[in-house]
Length: 422
Length: 189
Image 1 (cartoon, chains in turn red, orange):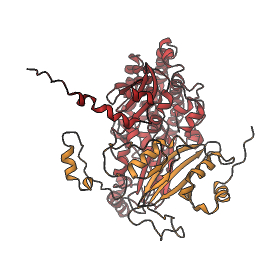
Image 2 (image 1 turned 180 degrees about the horizontal axis):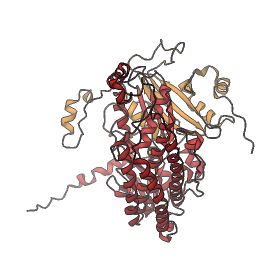
Image 3 (image 1 turned 90 degrees about the vertical axis):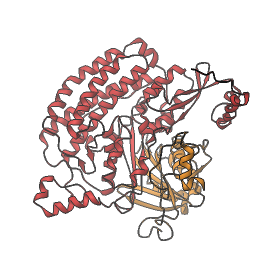
Image 4 (image 1 turned 180 degrees about the vertical axis):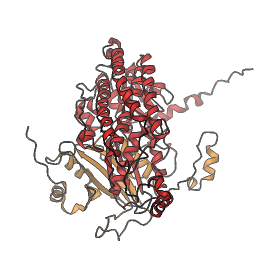
């Protein structure tokens, strides 16, 4: 039997009015007096792409200010890595940006390689490029589906996830895992690609361009889509630079900056591809850039797959101080047994010094700062993640637009809260 | 428009700030410059605005803790690293024009770690500094928003310090919060 709750005493009801004082200086004075409305969006709101909470100050429907609140997915990955050896810490990086784990693996592995001064053989680099570009497609597909569903186009999600399943299937072929692959490791990749991998990629490359055309047919010239996206969430190039935006969010404002071109890694300088640029810096331009990036990724993948057929050789470094010897060598070589044992029990020492290495992930620049101790565990590992920076710039992008535009803006900068909170 | 030729940041900084440039190191093609922390704001603004340098973007701010004994008088930069104090904060700057990076490092004392904020020069530093203030306990003077960023507001301690224990942490909900804090020795200090 339901019991009616007794009316709360007046003091109880008024209690949290006092807590508005904490927000003094962060929201406008009009919010303190009650002239504008404070509205909580999230952390359970489906359009916040995870557990982002936004405290919005609204004047009617217009956003006066926006206070993002993060940390709900903070898992202490950076702290945990301090207690693990360099190789064992790698699976933690999968769990940061869970929509493109390969890029995180690459950011971490490349940073460790830089700290150790370790070379990656050519075949390893090509396999990495294939993985990274497939990850870019998979990540952009999730973005496309969820961004469209936020703005009311329900069907795109189903098409996008259909193709994403195929990419995840390929990751499973490589690593045995669909998402948390831990495939790219310091020194190269875990193992060589299986025999049926290349035919599967080729089949995908054959089908996928037509699918991208399908997505475009659904959205690009769609008048409702254009109404919702054009002229919304505009960020000027100099403001974008000042707030540290990277990736498609920066290129949407017309700044030509892609780390794959500017500071190439893993042999990206040898591939022929273009960097799509926007003009207006609005939601629509950021959408167009990611759509074009599908096509540029296809170009890179076609070249990389062709190379993979001709370039043979080791797929990870042959320096067995840092990379394990082949399983087959263990029965024949005492040296290999020693290396194997040492690697999986102690790991390896890295210098007591610091490096910063950045790569271009689907969302922007992922930087990895590692400070070694001279022993087998790092002193400090810090990840500069694009989602973190992009959410900190949300207030600038959202100011002055309508509440309904907020979901479009959040979707267009493509945030992942695991990436943001780490 | 003619682009002025790139200048060596170390030489330019030494010329402009003299003794304040305490230490310079090259490691894996990365330049690290340690500057007196009192001049942090001036140095960062100088690096951003000077022709021939133009470090127009802040990539990352990261802090490191040299606890327990990897800092002090022995680490004077003669053979090995230069680490006069326990905490260090590195600003990773990027010059898009000249396509190069630079690390500017400031040290903060153990007892009361304080640094001036860089948010006036690089708005991108806003959350990066708040994260460090939260996780490493370094106060950025002049920062407009000094609330915690990642950890809950009522959290005790700074998890990324090396003397903060890495152990099993029970997830606190409102029903078990009191029970958890009872078993945490450092939470009641």
